[in-house]
Length: 217
Image (cartoon, rainbow, N blue to C red; front, side):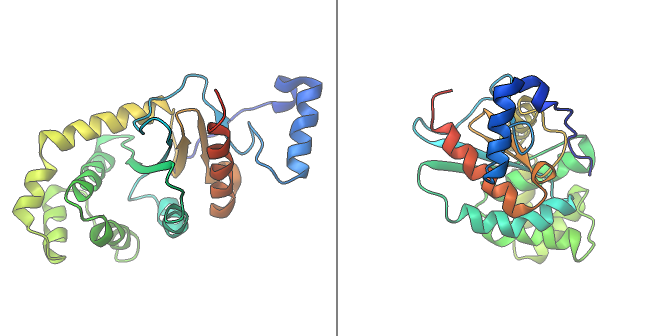
């Protein structure tokens, strides 16, 4: 997968005093703006209720980096405080196979099958080397796992799922996502494994951004 490449000259942009602050943050092990995360020039829309901090993971089922990140993300998300609203957004950089995987995720979510099917999709693609890139293949896949194929495919092709896909693409554009896995926070910040090096550091940076988001913009 292509990942976002940033050309950030932090020292020049910040000036002398800002450079000292960045150096101090690095020395203390704190995430550094322009190195570990990016502040969006134009805020992205959020859907979380007032008083909650929205955190969005952008992913693609076919991405090996997303597959390896998933267990770390699951463990982290299970411990989030009530004031953090976490959700996933499947990206669609092009129609095939991204678009069909986007529909697959939103159908799984809409039918309340996250616990049973979401991890199985990752496993099917990355461990079992199945191809889930057509409606027929997806129908066979869900049927093998005890899901009513006809009902699933009705939801899969529904207007509601198509609407969710359009909204997901709009949010992906708003965050300027061009690589996954990536995490958006409060419509104001962006971070990723490519900016942090490891899942643990990425999630630590996300925690830092959640705290920043509680302050006035």
